[in-house]
Image (cartoon, rainbow over all chains, first blue to last red; front, side):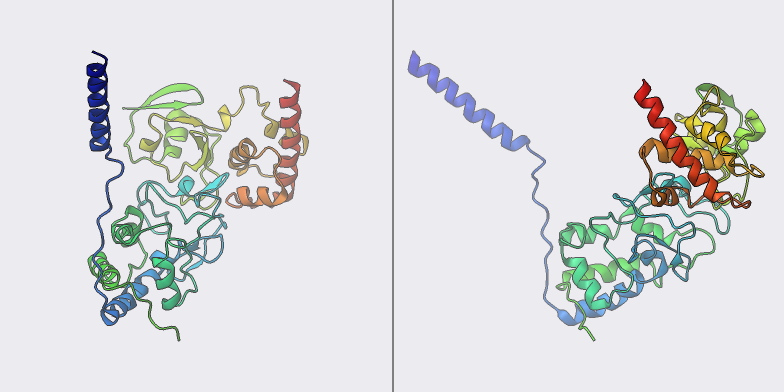
Length: 200
Length: 157
C-alpha cells in the first residue's frame, strides 16, 4: 500500500513538473537573426542608415548633453528641459507636459507621441557628434544600445517613437528617406553582419 | 458631453474633444485664473495640474483630461494658504501678475517632488515659465521660503 501511494505521488509530481514547463511561456526562445557575413553590403546599407540617424528627426532626441535638440538646425531645445533619470524630464518640465499623445496642429506647436522621451541618464545612446564608425559600434553593443539583441534592434525600426520621426508635425523636415527604405537599409546592415564603416 | 473633475468638482461640458483645456476652463467653466499667453506651449502662463503634472493647458486637448484630476490655481488651496501662496504674498513676488498663476502651479509640482530644492533644481523646474517683468529672482526666493514653510507645516503635523 505504501509503495502504491509513493508511486501515485511520484507520478503526480512528474505530471506537475511537465505541466510547469509546458505552461511557462515567459521563457520563449528569441528568434535567431540569421547573419550573413557580407561587410560590403552591410557597410553600404549603414551609410544610408547613418544619414537618417543623424537627421534632426532622430538626432534631436539623442543629444550629447542633457538638453534635447530642436528644429531642423538642431539647436538646444528652448526652455532647456533636462533629461532626468528616466529621460522623461524633471519636475514641471517633463516632456509630456507639452508633448501630447499626438501632434498639435499648427506651425511651431509641439510634436506629439504617447511615449515622448530621451534615452535614460544611465544609457544616453548619444547620436550627436558620433562618426558612422562610432555609431555603428554603439548600436550593436548591448551595453550601449539599451540592452538590445540583434532581433530586438530589427524590431526597434518599428518602434512607435522611431516612426514618429516620419510624422513630425507641420513645418519640420522629414528624414532623408522613407521609413520603408530606412527599415530595409537597417535590416540589411544587421543581417549582413552589422559591420561598422572604417574610421577615417 | 465631456465629464471633467476640476478642483474636486465634477463638470459636464459640451465641447469638441479637440478643444484646448484652457478654452474650456476659461470660456466655458469660468475659471479665469489660468492665463492665455502664447498658445504654443512656450511661456507657461497656462500651466494647470493634470493628475499632479504641470501640463500646459493651451495645447492639451480637453479629451486628455477626461477621467483625470485637474487642479487650477483656484483649486491649489481652498483658503489661499498653500505655502507658495503665502511666500508669494510675503515677498510681494508679482509685478503685473499675468504669468504668476502658471509660475505657482509649476513651483507646486517642484515642491511636491523635491522638498528642499537648490537654486539649480529651481532653474531646472521653472525654466519653462517666462516672466516679462523679470521677477525671476523673487520667484526663486519665494520658492525657497515656501520650501521652509512647507517643512514647518509638515513637522508641525
